[in-house]
Image (cartoon, one colour):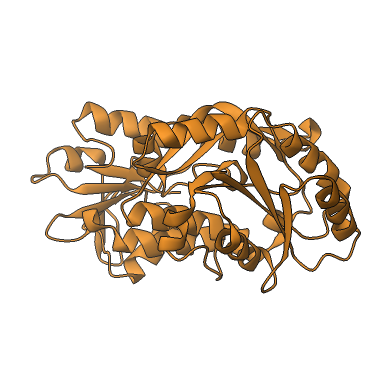
Length: 335
């Protein structure tokens, strides 16, 4: 048995049977389902006990602490498989998920974790922001693309991931704090030099629920993403040394987000903006210049693009690439 499925459960009786049915329907049958009971009080425990009595592959363990982070770490510490598939109690696996992801990790031994494309449901809950996020997520289709886009957003859905258990344990598992634990984990893996892949098939049905913890808790709100992103950006070796750094975007919102990096001692030599009303100004003593300044600057600075308006990162990336700037080596987009 090489696959463990770690399934944290907290009061999920409404969706649990649907989730468990999707796991039971996997084409790979040699797995253990490690269910971490996070002190349920809604009947979920009884559902799990009934399933475990009928299927010896299901193992129920109590959460050693409280909450999702403790439940995840309890699961990974208790898992027996070399590969651990993450799963949430309100989602559904496609039947071939475990098979495809196991094959991927066997074929690519240098990959620490593999996600997949996902299908969001129910349809009536999907807004334009969610659709755009999924469109962007699908563009993060290779380890290089994931590494180069990691500072924009989480490049894969956490419950779609299958990970090498020893890698997860080796980096200390999931961390608790005032930040999204999944995004922090992906950032940490990249910073430790690991590669993350993505299967090009849709292998998970990802439920959207306006009342879910990930929609309501402060750790998953925009300021929390901005803070953890800036923390890891400040540690990025590409921004250190003698190479100059410039920030693309001098608007109020972009200044607010880039301020976090300035506070972490990464100060730009210039802000780039295409608005003639901003060009010529100074922000905390730093000049606002047009892109023409950047094209003539030698040696070439490293560019952090903070403009996130719909379509803007792609347009700015195209212009930078046309001028010989290479994503990952000479510029990055920041969410």
